Length: 247
Ligand SMILES: NC(=O)c1ccc[n+]([C@@H]2O[C@H](COP(=O)([O-])OP(=O)(O)OC[C@H]3O[C@@H](n4cnc5c(N)ncnc54)[C@H](O)[C@@H]3O)[C@@H](O)[C@H]2O)c1
Image 1 (cartoon, helix red, strand yellow):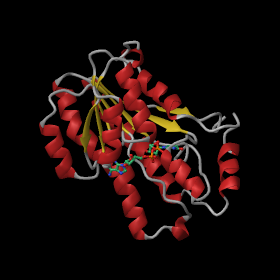
Image 2: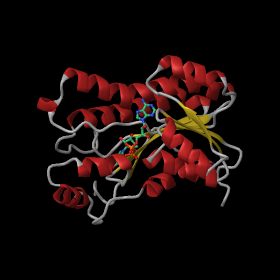
Image 3: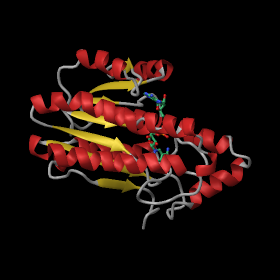
Image 4: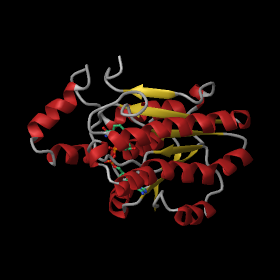
């Protein structure tokens, strides 16, 4: 265990599995005090049994009321890591209005609400770092069958840049990580639920010139950098971690 984040209090959303979970653990291993949140209490209980010193709290990041209740108990936040996201599969022709609304609620509104609740605390304590998880499927790259997902993840990049611009003088930094394809439970589900899982896995791997998909820990490594004091001159930027997908 090293201590690049010692003394920092960090809130992680979608920490029950995948990138959020790996990042919560990585932050904890770097000495941070971590509050891991997710809508799914079962995965949080598992995380807490593996890491009893990571505090877990059920939180629906799309609920303004739930966030208001949650924030009442919080006195200080140095870092907010927003990882909530959902992948809708299909083109615009497969995306009904309810799919559009759901994707924007989960992928964008969650980040808007969490940032809006936590920025006042960061202003009071004279600084902080916000890290929002976007995707290569965004304004960075158009990918087939990622219509509304790509739109939401482009919005994440815009939201990040706007926050960075508005609060740069308050010592609040806001950056985005854009992962390529990364192993996670929902990725595994996308493979399993496809008509030909063997081919689907090959196709996912082929998108990365490195010839493999990434690990959640490889995303967490970038998050440690952006959360810590090594990145204090860095704001409003998007950091691709993608196995060469955007070379
Ligand atoms: N896995 C990938 O290939 C990949 C690639 C690029 C970007 N991303 C992004 O990374 C993030 C994490 O994805 P993943 O694949 O690692 O994890 P995942 O999709 O397997 O898990 C998502 C987590 O979000 C939680 N969640 C869903 N709705 C929520 C809500 N309203 N409030 C709180 N929690 C909620 C779920 O319970 C779950 O624990 C997402 O934003 C995703 O879009 C993932």
